[in-house]
Length: 206
Image (cartoon, rainbow, N blue to C red; front, side):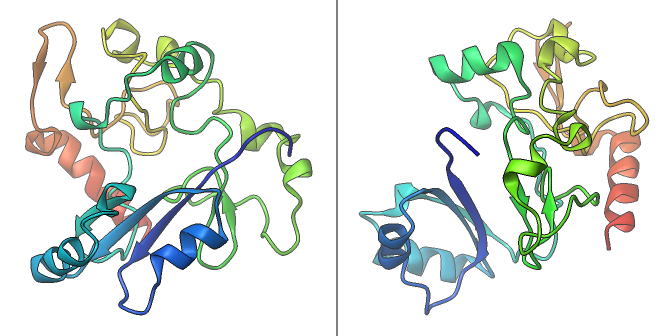
């Protein structure tokens, strides 16, 4: 698989993980998402790693599933030229993304249940030629319902798993509470219909 690639890790925090060694040994790691059991563990980590804490995405709670995926908010906007140019032609979440689960299964993203082989048997060079795996790569914001009318569409991430209509790959991300017609943000989880739909997603993936 040609070109540059980067690795993002999602981990439950453990005291015996040496992040300096990890980052030096695997220099393609560009982001580590750390999940902490409680605020105390989080604060202790920040105090001990203050100089390096900007390298990590820190979250309280254990990583038991992937229901954290797909949240759309201003905090997740990525304002740079690369993001803008990429979003014109490709999906801002899934383009060129390959997810490897803890068991080695290959997916489009951690939340999706569909698998496309296992890392021990499947070559990436074969995988990217498989249209079923790459079909979501070109679902741009200009094609997505509601998003295509949004002023933030070229700096916003996306989600093709948690969507408002599971039968339509062009439906709006479920976890987005923004209404471009009014320019207002609401908490998506305050919408009973969205919350009910999310619970159905969650139960299917238990």
